[in-house]
Image 1 (tube, rainbow, N blue to C red):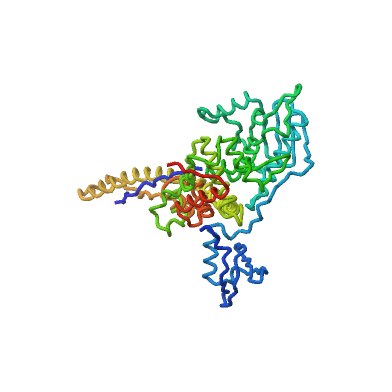
Image 2: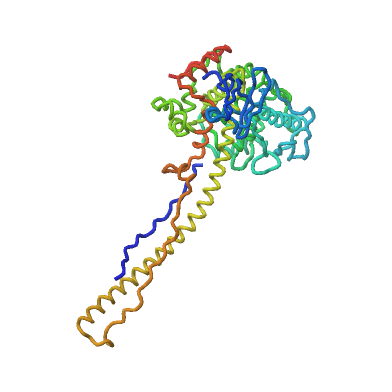
Length: 499
């Protein structure tokens, strides 16, 4: 008799991708080498290979990471998780595009050193000259912030692409891709899928001069600046929450701008002007502000232990990653929060919290990029494995049918032998069928298994779990809320949180 108790192989399911107020690094402390020698110094920066320390004499010392004691390496790792080991340039007083910007092309498609954009109607030379200054000026502004990221056009393109268009054509595109919000008008749109920036002429304050459009230096270019920032951050947009993307764009748009120059030294004046002009804030009080702890998703962390809170899993337990409705208030509050982290959170190191956050996002992006590659390879193997399973199950069904017939012949043969039938009348049993060989056991890669956690892989969540500690820095929700309110009070802005 042949045992046919084989278990059908189940198919492997598809893996889904949904797509302290002070700084510890500045503290003077004793550092110990692996052979027990000690020096007193503060940390300047550290990477995977070496550490740069500032000695009591003021000199800098470079030490190989491998030469430090295990406790010191653990201390550096705790700082690295909060983005406090990076070296950042100083937030500039101002940034500026070159005085002379080369503009090529025409009459509808134009190119500057970093951008290519076309217009759906004729524009004046003055329009092109001023648009070029805005585009290139915004590039140099974002590039000049202390983040250490390398800005480059998406998809390996030579230029960032954009289109300036009439209101009717623009509104037709918007109606196809966005829901309408009562009382609000879309004044610019970066199409991530097309990697193209769309801005209507009306948002730029363009004027008709004869048969052409012209853009004067006094025109309101904040909408264009806002959308250009989105375009420049294309590589990071899929991995940051909407409040951060919109807050960064609003922050840069609020910085006083003139003739290709952004005056970061006057950011406070720009913020107050933006609050009044764009958001109708009368006086020095901003009401109904959403608490930063709520935007960051810290309110749900209150019941989680401090140890768990520092882990990516703990952070993700409280992060409302993209609860964004697109209201005017949300844009305002996102701008305020970015301004706080840029100028007020660590005023002695302006921009460092945002820079650390973006660097951690960038590092996590590399990790998730590798994960995506692994998922793609996994999918190929999964599909091939499932085909093998289907074939095996077909062979198994055939084997069971043949085994059943064989077993019936064995029973009949035994009965006929007992009855003493002559040999020529006894059934021929035949050769026993051979069981099929099951496909080699298929295992999900460890990296995917950990990332999946029983559901779809949330790449944004994975990145935020690694990057948010740069902004939180072990502080409680109440501490961050109080810090932001007090910091804005210091520059004459009263923040009243929503109840």
